[in-house]
Amino acid sequence: MRPMPRITRVVSQQESEALIARLTSCLPAATFEMETFCRLAGVTASRTIPSAAVEVKYRPQMLINPDFVNKYCRRDEHLFLLVMHELWHVILAHTRLYPRATLAHNIAFDAIINAGLSRQFMGPEYRGFFDALNPADQFPGVLLRPPVGWPENPVYPDVGPPGTRKVLERLYPPKGKGRIAAPLYEEILRLLKDDIQQKIERGELVLEPVLIGDHRPDDGEGDPLDDPFMSDVMRRVVSSWPAPPFATRKRGEGAQFTDWFSAIGPSTEEARRAFSRVLQRTLGPRAGRQRRKARVLIPSMSGLNVMPNARDRMIPARRRLGVQGVLYGQPGLIRARAPEMPARAHVYLDVSGSMNNLLPHLLGLLIPYAVRGDAIVYQFSNKVESVPLDQLRKGQIRSTMGTDINCVVRHLLETKPIARKALILTDGYTGRAHPEYVRELNARGIRVHVVMPAESASRADLEEIARSFTILPRYTAAPSPWRVGR
Image 1 (cartoon, rainbow, N blue to C red):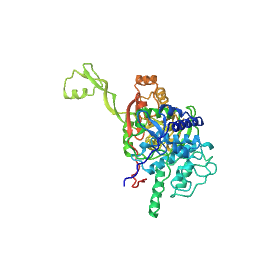
Image 2 (image 1 turned 45 degrees about the vertical axis):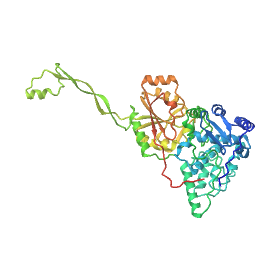
Image 3 (image 1 turned 90 degrees about the horizontal axis):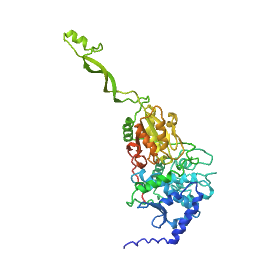
Image 4 (image 1 turned 90 degrees about the vertical axis):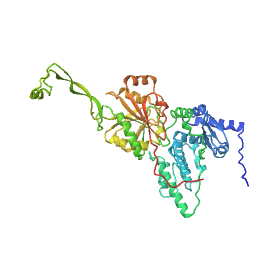
């Protein structure tokens, strides 16, 4: 017997217009201009997806299921959170972190985003949306919503495998607790793995939580960031959107720094080799421990002529041998490969909001070179600041949460002595350099080499100033033998 085909009710024009009107009305409640995305890409009502999704096509657009909105988004602020949740999946490059995302990966992604949005929009008008999707006393749904009583008097339930409570306290810290480092995706994945193993051993059913967005297997449409138009849209939108999910203060407008701490993760041998190769090309004149050979001018005998020269060390030998010589060696400078003075590389680390989930592995990659004195490390967002070694080791970051490559170019042009080479470590979403700065870089012969993580590498903004692009190998954790299916 053939299964009955699934019937999808068509969205009427009236339903679509009502949904767009609601979305527009909720924008003033936000603290930034979300209409930028709506104007560039557009929003459409559709019942072909469970809740919301970003569709990749000639003109990318966001699809929103009106039935999901009617059921869970009673307030306009809840609709706003739904749209923001889906856009953060794209902004944080979740489609690129893992080659094949499982249900467990999607739960980890949603846990980070839901907690970040809850902590960023803590007003009473925003509460209740994530609470209605999953119960507070079941694992893993408990990771996808704030605890009961949060943020004033949170009650952390004792459910799930050991370590769940600590992860919840880091996802949803009590009010007034201050800066608390967010858990890594791998920590949440370990909890999910332990829970599945325990339930399989006890013969219990693995409960699937309610996720937001379209988490179905890839249907071949591709990665939104691989689309040039979509990539440009997201770059322009992110430049004026809020800080990453776990910033505890309001986003800087390019005038004030925000201090926060990033976790420090491991780096792979392949990444270290790739980074070391490009670092060798950017060594400059400042003293360091890194040595290299280069073609330099050294004093030597550069030729022969009839002028007597007492420094010609061949004269005594010719006299002993009784050889009558009429040509004498003459002093001069010749080019030869010789050990160059110790050098350091100028490294500029992007600490803007879009780098939030990439920084742990990049810091782990960069710290050994800074400890050895091979690199002078600067951090940049809308401004450039040096990073003392003790702060780098602790993962202490100072950022305005925006991004502007022009601050790096200005710093390079104003550095004394002139830095002829520099290395920029970024995901590429930096904005374009001013044409005058580009001309000045070329006139002075300053070479800029760009290093990007494979998880997020956009070249468009930096093509005018980059001498080379190096893509680091994708970070992959130890292979896991388990996979969660639907």
